[in-house]
Image (tube, rainbow, N blue to C red; front, side, top):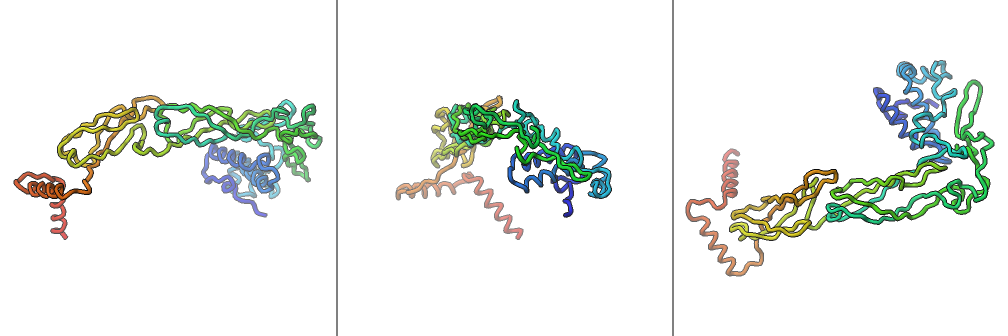
Length: 375
């Protein structure tokens, strides 16, 4: 079966830099490594394919040969000099896998230790809570170290035994003719140890599922989408590896009055047509109480009034934002006969004399006239 293009395997362009190759390989190694996909032959083959591609492309000489001659330039079976994917290097995870899967550390019993998975928790808060800051209790389901066997997976009083197949190395070498391939030990699944008597609590896993109650301090000023990291509160590591982290994702409920943009707050304030025309005072809401908003006469709908320092204090420090109140002039409804007569009388006076009482309307009418004259 023909091999896929190495650049296609890693999902990069042919002009990809060494860092881009390394980053792509790390992502694929984490996703498809057999230890994370037990009994998944497809994942194992994809891991080997990515490993082979990276082993060729990370070496400048091999990459140049591959770019010029393709697989024939690096495949020993085709007469090439690279021998990519074979010999002592194949299956050796190396520095890339070590950094991804907990440094390739082996525990005291010789087992490979893995860092626990990171967890995410979505925390929904009110606008008032994120602006002022708060502390909340959350319950998180997570894999924690089994207290009965202390994470060994073995029945209390017993210990995991060194795997006879790989001698505790977790890897075995398969040799056929001139080729030697190193792969995960099929007996211990790369652990280097075999549990003969499993812990009855965790059934040999070394970890159990529990609900953890944690306290989360939410600093003032966090915004929708911000994350709070709780170090070491993720899932427990395997075979003595470090625990992962918990990332609390903040979600802010929609507020009935205010909306937020960066560190500023916005709200709409309806005012009567009389207040808009003659001016007046009204109470405007803020998150810390009410303030008196002075409305000047002849205020138009959509005008914004700025109240300094009534917004949000930035979570990383700086000046507190402002509150912007946008007034909406409300047209009266359910008018009585007297009120309608008064509006009619007012309308008649609006057309007397040379004063322009509706400048925007007059300007708009003039623009409309000019538009039709040019059509």
